[in-house]
Amino acid sequence: MKVVWQLDTATVRQVYETMLERRKIAYTTVMTMMNILEQKGHLKKRYEDRAYIYQPTKSQKQVVRSMVRDFVNRVFNGSAEPLVAHLVEDRRLSESDLEEIRKTIKAARKSKE
Image (cartoon, rainbow, N blue to C red; front, side, top):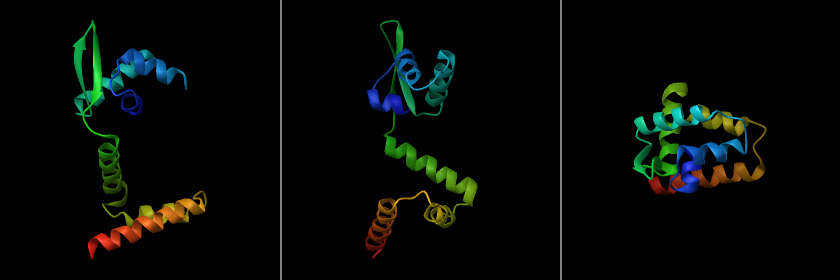
């Protein structure tokens, strides 16, 4: 999905070649994943010049929001608090990360008032 969002529209070949620059991956793996993403409704395709051209059906923000919500529901029984607590306790968070979390919480509180 990241590659398709980056390119706006892409063929399987374009995604494969872009991913190949970062790591070894089989063409058929990319093709299979793109077909799955299409079946799930994250991509749509059209046939053009003897190739399928894929484009995202949802923005990156929409998909990430949906995936995080699904993760919280499955792993934390729908409660985001344990996830946030885990992230805050994780020593890998920088001071700027923690400050961003503080700002987000503050903004969320203001929007509920």
